[in-house]
Amino acid sequence: MSNPDHPANGFSDPLSLAVENRDNNTMKMVENALARKNVMLAFQPVVLASNTKRVAFHEGLIRVMDETGRIIPAREFINVVETTETGRIIDSLALELGLAELALEPTLRLSINMSARSIGYKRWMQTLDHGLSLDPTIAERLILEITESSAMLMPELVTSFMEDLQARGISFALDDFGAGYTAFRFLKDFYFDIIKIDGQFIRDIYNNPDNQVMTKALASIAVQFEMFTVAESVESAEDAEFLQSIGIDCLQGYYFSAPVIDPAWRNQNQKARA
Image (spheres, rainbow, N blue to C red):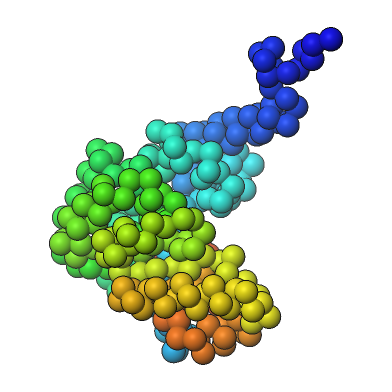
């Protein structure tokens, strides 16, 4: 007897159907948030490993607010929207918000995430050009983060894109380094300024010899190519101390601060204007 739910009969299996429904709901939630302009950045500091009281730069992390008022982090929706037009719009809005923040606070250095798929997207480039025209110092204070998996989709295009924008003073970070499958023959051509080591190798590194070996290897690659190193997802003093001991340049994670949507410099600027 044939199975009426078999894919060959035009039906998905229950698990696939549940995943499809979840993704559809996620897409609708994000599209509704965009329509209501309920999009914002949350800011997380990246501190110097040599002096964790000093912030090297902040990362601006995209957030959306759903209809109930919940603020939804990117990890809960980005995989669903990344390959779509909505993903390009999200990248453009993240850049727009980041550039506005850089214009507001002249001492701020900020990294913003983007997908390699947004390279050549007209709205994204127009947003960048407009933002840079407002303040000649913004370019040198802007860092664009591209995930390892995204960069590997089109390495030649990413390389050319980076060269053009680095000539304008913008820096680049390779995000989630070690999580994907970097073709090392391309890594030497990318000329990323910063490498952010993926959190899966950093969490509990103090107690995990395998993660210690992997992180040291990834850090040595960064040193070879003269790239600044950032350890992501630092969540304990012990992990921070170990990372300091092996020469990681910067640390980022909840041990130092959670991402916040109301950063201190806004309050300082408001007081200054009062």
